[in-house]
Image (cartoon, rainbow, N blue to C red; front, side, top):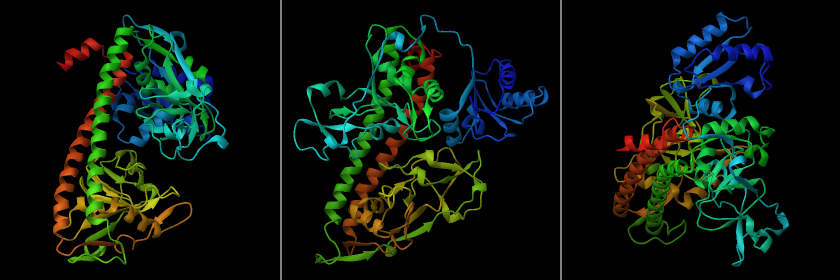
Length: 531
């Protein structure tokens, strides 16, 4: 472990940590975990455990600094009390486990490895790019699933190529319900496209598996239940292990088939495996259903908008009673806060809503929130329900630029402020609702307009004139607009309710998963509590 600590020094630290029975796990993080430490760098340690709180962390820090002769300052924090999603992600993905508590194996469980109980790892096929087909032209072709299509826990067919299916390729065909894992990806410190990232293939169309993406399944179904595998690999403990085993550079870390086969597991009896998987699958099925419902709701509203308001362009003859509106007649735009690095802090009750809150596939997410202490303007504050637009894009394909999003969640922060990468859009017309504006800016015509108003090479920037100068054709009396707003408002409200339920379901699932996988909560206990 390249952390700048000698074996003797590391042993001293571990010996201190072992004296505290409330610690389930201790993780080295920061520069010493990343390997970019300096001679006098602090030693950053996160402690984990049900009762591993702030007081315990402070006590351990004092113990390490005052009662040992180690020539370092120590930053000891309780993982349970961290509010910053980014710091938690760093620790989870990049931290190095230095202490794992001796845990009693639950009654009836077996301590083993995945390889010993029948894990099978099927690596994808090394297709030749010259044989790829850009679009499907016949019935004997399937999309090729690459790492980029299975990253971040989801599977998709974005920008896929196709390949003819032959007898020799049949074993590489994947179908709905298969579990896939990325054998190559970013180092676990990264947040996206991480090596070891596992996904459930939920698409109805079969696909072909490309190299460095593997299908994992049980070849000994009397010992290892297929469905438990997915949740075992989603468990943070397993991700920690994979992170410690991965090799390669920061942008191309690798794991092998043997790495996966050698992963230790405390395995419940088969009936309990089945029961655990059923409990967690119920949550995932409900989540998938609500996500599909939201997508259908939004697509329906977008189709209505296109039918009612998307027929006319500049130069077209307009129906009687219609006219061109310029956006500055309808909205006001407010630029975000230009923050400095010193404004960012580990913990705060105020957060910056950044570009990272925009999902490339559409939608809003709280993981882009940055805790901060600064001096933004009151006008740059946003509330749940406010409409914001991406004014910057780190992708040269302008996947995010000009995309609108409603702020559906505050991430637990008391106040939120937009960064300079976003713009808040406020209606200044009594007959124009935020929901109407959202679907107006979701329209492809608006997207094309924004791309035309962008500049930059590495990073795309949207001109401040882009939104105010956009032209839209509407009925002069806005009667049809008000009619659509009723539909859009109802759609937005339903989507918002679904998002609240999705948040609850995900949090409950993510709380149950480690407890069920570790045996801390047994299936019978869960059933009793559920009743």
